[in-house]
Image (cartoon, rainbow, N blue to C red):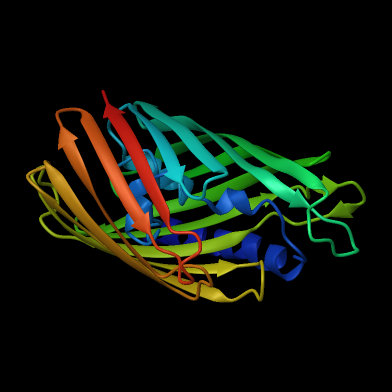
Length: 303
């Protein structure tokens, strides 16, 4: 079993390394917006975390340990002219888990400017982006799962548009009942082309570990998690995400996170409420420059 886990992680590195080396400028950064308030509040340290429909976004293999059918809808309050919404579904059959996600984003009233500076803009235009994804995972053993996701992404900027197909690969392993490991490669795919210019998708490699107190109980406990993220955009710097979640009696949760190496954010906080099969999650992610604080709201239903 350990040999299978090592092989899976080696394959992820083998796929990612040449992709990173060949990467140039990237586009479609909206593919990096996570679909869940729980993950956002925990600093997106979610590669080695399972338990909700938002987790497969960071690692599709994490769906292998979901036992319920779950729906979720997320809305992000960002800026006045920015709209971001996401719908997710996951279900299962024996050892197979599969699901889908739909994402839509809009940035309205972007000012149109010419090369010659003017006091007033020449007009305004909108930017639209959309993603449809399908993911599946197999729980190979009671400790190990693997999975992947395929997505179609589209972006329209004024009168120009582009689309691309991307692939995510992931592995998830329970070392012990309270310690989980996760690895994923995200956004391997075709290059979107705006008119005559082609760009890479924002590929990234994620390695994560999480620790849970009181494993196997349904009344709550503490989760500590950390992710290492290697990305191919900007200066190709590495990131570190850490997060925590405390759940009491499956009634409410308190979450905190901190991200190292990001230009726009570091600290995050949030919480959640639960009633029977209904869950409400909230996350607040302040901007480091006080320009774009975000509020994320997610409603989930388990059946």
